[in-house]
Length: 135
Image (cartoon, rainbow, N blue to C red):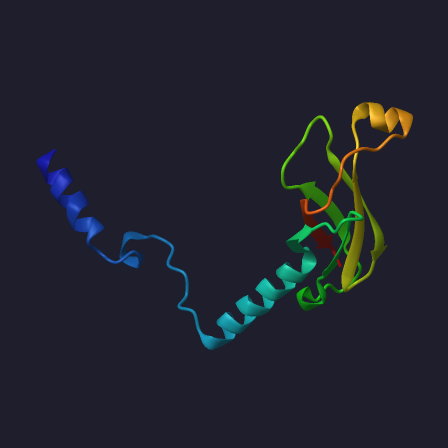
């Protein structure tokens, strides 16, 4: 048994190839360039960006995401920063393009949704906008 332990310890100090393990080829310039290209392609396949916007007194906000470089108009969703279950913020976009989105938000409750009554100010509320485009 002791001889087996010594043999195992000696084998673990040998190079991986000598132990019969897979050794990937060393990275060269061409491989690095190919890897960078593949990573850029993957990043463009599902571009995602997000930003916190502050609503004005009327409940409007605009986000200019032109620096992101979306290749087409993204889908946009909103997430309220502070959830108020009795009077939550709801948003719809009023304009959306490849470079920006404008949203209008309001507060409502379940009863408000059923009766079309909206209540509460949204001025100064923070909403997270998430934009995602899949080419």
